[in-house]
Amino acid sequence: MAVPAPFSPAAVLPLGTPPPPPIRRGQPISVMTVDFQNASEGQVGGAVLANAVRRSIEEGLMFSGEFYVLTFSPRLSLVRRAIVDETLGPGDLSAVRTPDGVVDFNAARKVAYALGMQTVLSGAVESVELNRAANTASVTATVQLLDTITGETLRSASVTGTAIGTPDLSGAQLLLLAARDAASKALLEFSIALDDGSDCLGELPDTGGDASKPCFPLWGYITGIRRIPPGIALFLWLGTLLEWNFD
Image (tube, rainbow, N blue to C red; front, side):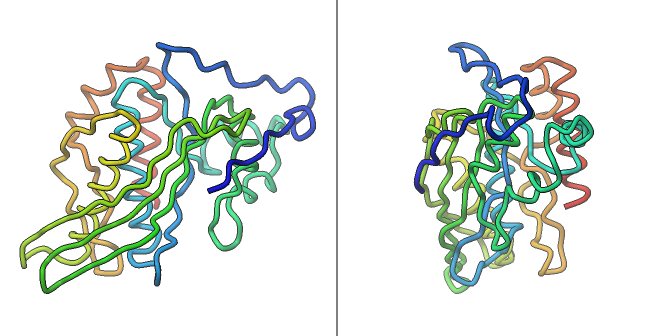
């Protein structure tokens, strides 16, 4: 992916909009994530598979203690407040993704800037392979972490996650396991180790099941919350639960 050109906040946001705080060594970095795209041939697994990768990466970032994570959604109270304050307009929100689902990085950075987020995380599932005869699956994904102000790529990864299952696992479950493995490898490229989850075998919706199960048990959320300020942790936790319920 090409690195987007820097933009002038004064030219695209109301005068006086405060910039995100500078990134400082030893301090958590704020990240606004946007839905990952499924760019694989035939879009196997659809948006659910792509966002399974995103969610696992979000969890790893948040529980590393090195990042604050906010998933972009027009429903977020911060976004609604920015609309009320006229810092952003409805068109700014719809511009984040093009009609074909591709992220517009400049539009995403504009929203992140208005929300005071230092970085933007985006990614895509590039290819998917499922072999039912061998009970194997692979998911290849690319991920980028961009500086909101400059557009500089701070971290990036291009990885392939794999899964080997048993005949009793569905194809959807194999794909979710491979997505989970891809996320783990992407986090390692970001120098972050992801703890093993115990509940990642949800079905994709088109198989009649539910893919909204978290990849971390509840105790992981409770203990992980202690790594970031309680108010922010509670906000992020409730926001994640709402996302699972309404996606």
